[in-house]
Image (cartoon, rainbow, N blue to C red; front, side, top):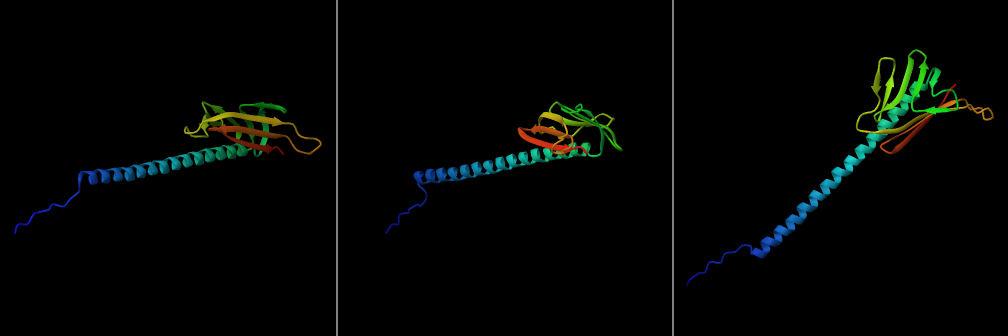
Length: 158
């Protein structure tokens, strides 16, 4: 009796089918990983914008605390793109916008307040009149946008 050797293996159609299935699985995995990375980058960018905005709001609040004289914007009602104050114990402080970045000057040159990964636009300071009837004192309202996100602070001068 002769035995016939039967080779068992994959047919060409089976091999092509397995390759197609693996390609779909790997392709789906790559797409999912890319979407996760992009979502993380968008979240990080949003967090950075919020951090930069709140940092600048705190610096403006600090500059307006303990102010003896507001040089600009001029006496109310007035507005302008820069804030210059004489702060007790510190001296003259100027906050303004240059090339999309907020900067602060304490008499020794301008120092950047924001990093170069965000763009600040429309920095405005408004010096408001005191409200005689409501008893509200004069105030400085600062507003700006960072990468399209608006920020605003109002500091009453007492």
